[in-house]
Figure (cartoon, helix red, strand yellow):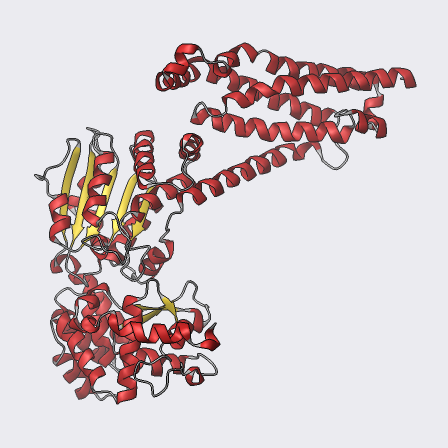
Length: 606
């Protein structure tokens, strides 16, 4: 091609490229009309970025790039003609949709007077006609841009990399949308609690639930589109949370519809707030299903709240269930949420209120709900089949008995005794574990607490006597350990009580380091300064065993986010929520006030 001909060809391509940019603007006007249009717009945006990058790199995007350099292949007349044809086709693709978009861009006077009806008509119009048309337009755009990349590939991009780059851009846009929604929802997630419970399960345990008639009936589905609720309850210490974690894991592994779960915990303000339950479910559903993400984005585009309100969350929960009635929702440990509204937990709704609201949103639509808790009156009143419920809810009940868990308890006792008495005779371990399982009356927790009395250095008769004297009432076990604390030397007794108060009343779990620092502030100290000189040089296992866990009986346990987490960063928890029911909690919040005040006002902490 002669120089003059080349210039005209390149200028012609520049003009065609600019015509595309004008025509393509119409796609933006429908991006908020439905969840399908949001997904379509995401795909269009990714292809648009690739197209504009192509125009810049080959030298036809603007006059500046045209003046600097033109791609070598655009010096070939046949290539210029082919590119011109593709650009013209791209422009025609979007020019063709302009009349379709006009109705969305210019609402009538009657539409302004009745925006709700207009919005409904707009969505119907999209679903019945315009959606398919613009979907095909966007697909054509995608195909044409891919041909441009193959015909005149940018020097730094191989033609085969187009699809990878487009996928990466779409994924980036999805991540941006997820970040926006997650920030708006501000949800609490409980994956770590789920992992902690599931990791404690022993092989072959919990399998009895798979064939239980009530559970099988709940799994069978909802042919009548009712919300199917299964209430699984049992006494404290019966392994309900581990069982619930097993159910969640089994459902996820089986390929059934997605499971949204929440594990309540009395150790955390966030996890004992019942309003956090549906909020977390919405968060999980958004991350699982792009259609639900689009649904929430659409709602967010019309919502003026900078943070999702409880009403927003319930509205979305109903929309999500309507979108996918096969979803499964699980809440474990509901009894660990406060029964009544309290100023300390800043709750506006108690656990019964939230449970009632959740069931109301799913009534008559579908989905399945599993509630796991102790049998407490306010929860029971909401889950009775003959209670004052809206139509469209089906109730089932599964009361966990010692007969259900007997084989699991025996397996657990054998595991605990074998661990504690490694190296002892197998026959002795079997004898002790069988006796502990029998005396536990179905309570895993009782075996766990009593295992503290099993030490390898004890003789056979001492071990047998320890098991013979094993209490059969969990309250007796707590009382015995509390009495042991009361018999400690004064300084150890004071330290143990301070540790327990902080663990019980802290708004969130404290790490070993944090707990060690706060208990240096003693309300009976001779001076008013925290005794930070009492802190150890290193937080090793010996310090933790002797100065924290050892002096607190069996009330506490350590938890870490990873197996190799640094010891001082692990958090300290009550061994079980039932410990809060014991009388020693009556030490109360008042005892915390003096040491807290000292710590805050001491000059060296400023």
